Image (cartoon, rainbow, N blue to C red):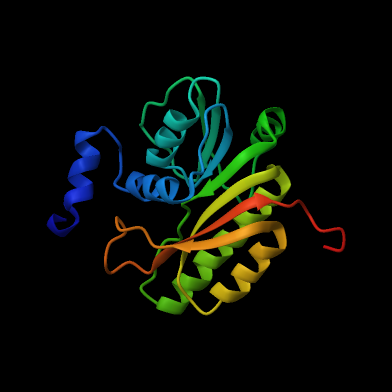
Length: 201
């Protein structure tokens, strides 16, 4: 456990975030200027809640963050957050109803990751499966001009996924935060300016 108590781990504890992952989202926002006050954001794979907390700070009291994770969390969220323990693959009618009530969304962010097996190609495939599901959610719920952020484990399907993102977004960027651990194979894709679903899709 000691090796994980690095600079970002300790900083998160000092700044009252439940996980160091918050600094990845901060870096993404500093680079791409994703958040604005008043936005509605959906956070997939939200537990323990660092991304949700940061998003809630950035969108402010007039904004709203709808977040979900298959795991629960003990993190206390502000009033502009609604957290649900949900499987994004099998969303409950109640959660779907809230998506419809709150949406459409200005941004969908996904820090989802599979339970790792230690087998590189299996983990990459499972990560890509989650990324594809996150994109499907984004395409159904984003406003035109909205943004999408998703984590993947680098692998052979990255180019095909990037090409797919370009179908839906005016600009697609790849980003590796400095706060990612050196040994991590994670990267983030950022789709900016959602174009909507192509008529021939």
